[in-house]
Amino acid sequence: AMDAGMQNENDSNHHTTGIRKLFLHQSQAIESAMNGIHTVVCTGTGSGKSLCFLLPVLAKAFISLRQSQNCLKLGSAAILLFPTKALAQDQYSKLSLLLKSLQENDNSRTAPLRAGVIDG
Image 1 (cartoon, rainbow, N blue to C red):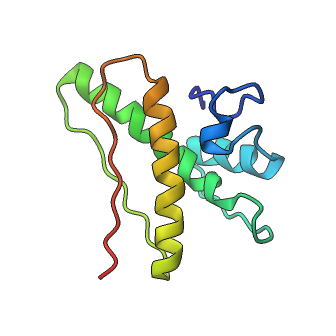
Image 2 (cartoon, rainbow, N blue to C red):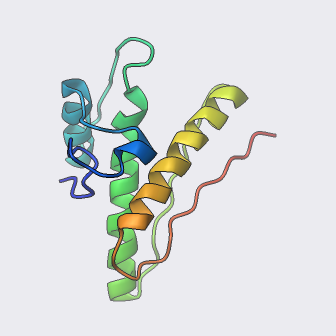
């Protein structure tokens, strides 16, 4: 389901994204989400829960973007809500790094995905 090379241990972009290899809970959660299954992840601080939802959101956005360009349809959008400004900024930083890495590896001529924060 995930073909972006993000779980490849030899991925040359792990220096940029910080991702070398997914933990078992991450790969299971991502697979579940990509299959449309509602998923709850409960692990300790710093265990990589963010990737459990960020990677499926990005994967689906890239899929939608490619399909919309092939079929002249509209793309998609995702809204991620966080309970604090600090957490929103932290997640935005992670998302920005992932987007940058993915778009550098995207050899197609797809339009870039964009991310932003509204915290007011």
